[in-house]
Length: 271
Image (cartoon, rainbow, N blue to C red; front, top):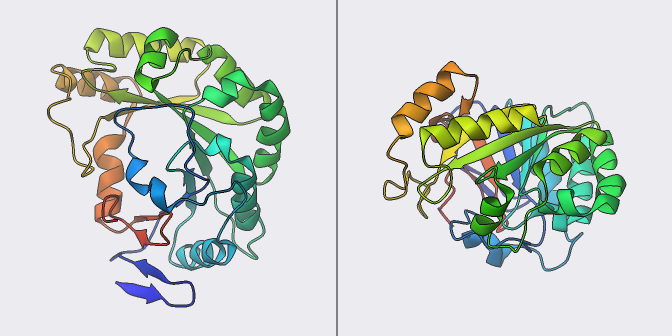
């Protein structure tokens, strides 16, 4: 562990980095997921869109790049598309780092505003692509939009075809992150059907991730009974299995996240 005292960041890592994640935005969200992973960090989020600790972000990007990080992901304790000024600022800081180029740069989203707000998409998505954004990761609980809306806790969810189409219109790629659980995609048949439909309507890649508990461990009470069969099918059909891949990177110190309280750490739940 070492401390970057100039910006007050604590860093927990042992090995060379390969990936960095940054929390951005106010924590405002247009969904009400009962299993929200960002909720524990929301109290530390800025109050206004555009409020960014620019020195901390710049120093973190530079120091992690020097240690080997090349992949960058933007996440949030809420929905980042509701804080477009903050996202634009952070992408601008990364884009203007002298002699450093993060690639790929990815943004996590629930996809709701993308599918519902064409003006927003036309205003911001091409701008973000120009600042280096390459892929939007859209979390999918069910490819039936009605069921997806139920899990998201909203009245309706926009057509996935619209979400994917608007991402593509901006020159970006879309990765669907399928959440597997007893209340989401819970059987091998539904998993196969979800992957098939997403590919048919243009998803560029698909990953799968079982639900995790508040301690960021596999939530065994929520795991689908057919998870082993789903894993086997995924491995044979080009679906990335992110559960252990991502957490192994955190455990080995190869991936770090800058949380809203200013802590840079590989432990999601150490706040």
